[in-house]
Image (cartoon, rainbow, N blue to C red):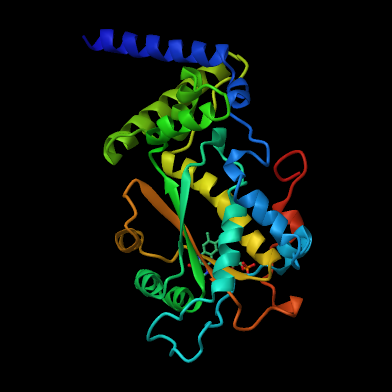
Length: 316
Ligand SMILES: Cc1cc2nc3c(=O)[nH]c(=O)nc-3n(C[C@H](O)[C@H](O)[C@H](O)COP(=O)(O)O)c2cc1C
């Protein structure tokens, strides 16, 4: 019985290896839809807002990168509402700009274009106050004072969105193939199962893949199997590209931001009614800096370039 199980497992893994060899991952990426900038997705949003923004004072990309900093303290839109007691009412113009920035940030790339994230933009004073209760230490003051806080959610069960993704492809006259669904499952590990089962399945699959990779290396076969990550890592890396794009879009409009991980995820999930399938890797408070950064000496420093950036090989 035990030997039979083993043989079955080996046969299954060999079958998987053959399948992956027959359909290189790169080909599957070309199957995933690539939307033109002005596709239906952006018919009334990012493309249009970017046009309206042309009329305003938008910084160049380099200026936006250089002027971004983690803003430790925000100007309250209504200074008469006392600090630390309640959340400040938000400035509608800043809310509008923050929404424009998050709309723009949706143009960030994502694995197979599955877009496995959601963002909750919190700007209503009651909700800001509720959110601030689950932000730790000074992070709470920032949420109360800033005009808007973007709460980034990473989808740990992206396979639940396959019917929607399939419909999305059809709208672009494309088909959801079994192969594409298979690759999304392989890379994301986002199975629509209870978390514990999903974690076990993901771990077993990744372990099997690493074993096959070792065999491939020993047999000196060309590498065809990807190195996979957990579903949390996979969805978080996708969500964080959107988060960074958002911060740079804000920075280019002169809005200050601070990314914050010092939060109580379950508490935030409760007050914002976020389903448990979403991880909350980061929240970003957005508004006007209490003291704008006019002097570059303020900038937080970085390690020297040669310690961080190599050319052609690690340490090289
Ligand atoms: C993932 C992440 C989480 C962070 N969490 C916090 C936080 O909880 N509270 C805080 O004050 N700053 C937080 N920061 C801001 C960093 O401390 C800041 O980005 C860093 O010191 C570099 O400074 P700069 O952004 O001004 O260049 C976070 C930054 C990142 C990227």
